[in-house]
Image 1 (cartoon, rainbow, N blue to C red):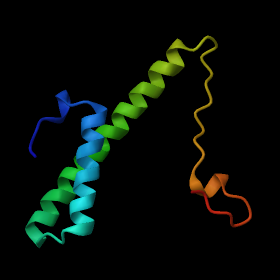
Image 2 (image 1 turned 60 degrees about the vertical axis):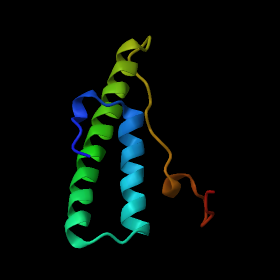
Image 3 (image 1 turned 90 degrees about the vertical axis):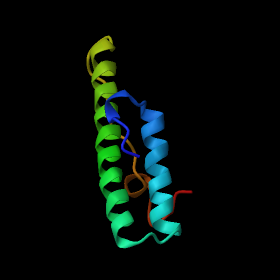
Image 4 (image 1 turned 30 degrees about the vertical axis):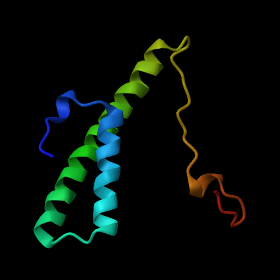
Length: 86
């Protein structure tokens, strides 16, 4: 689990993060293991976020006019009048 984050892909980083979340939610690890998983999860989250920001910057740079709208609809912003999104 102490793999260097510099060399792993976004997909591998994301998948490891999902696995950690599953362990924390479903396996009820002890306190020490929970803290280790939490710390690794934060590292993975930051790595995923940095990779997504880097990709967004690349797309902006290669777009014809340099103005790309990256507003992402969230569950809160796209639901109307109490509708839930599935």
